[in-house]
Length: 136
Image 1: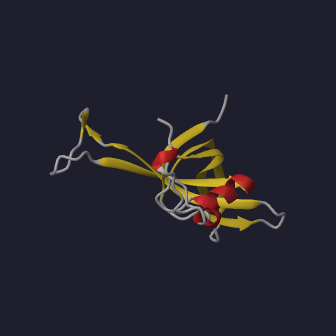
Image 2: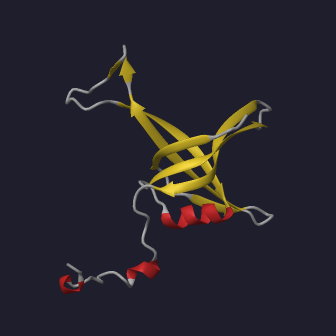
């Protein structure tokens, strides 16, 4: 059996990267996915006729190079496709109560909306092709 997750959604919190004591970069971000809300087998619409969306929030973690790429090129509002696996954690809080968590461990992330321009790309801004240079 395999543990495979594929989510297409929007990053809704700027990715944050931390480095562990052993030198592993860990990048975390929150991803929101949505689907139409249904009631009695029909799509629910608001008073203006737009369909009502049911949103779900996912905690996503990426490591090392993938995480650094996400940190560099993504921000809140970036649309991405995440492929990975579900990872469950269990710990005890200060009162000794068991707590549980769930996150998506990203293995690949495809950018679905335009990535942020890096400073290196800024110098190319304003370049154009003259219409005379386009073959007919």
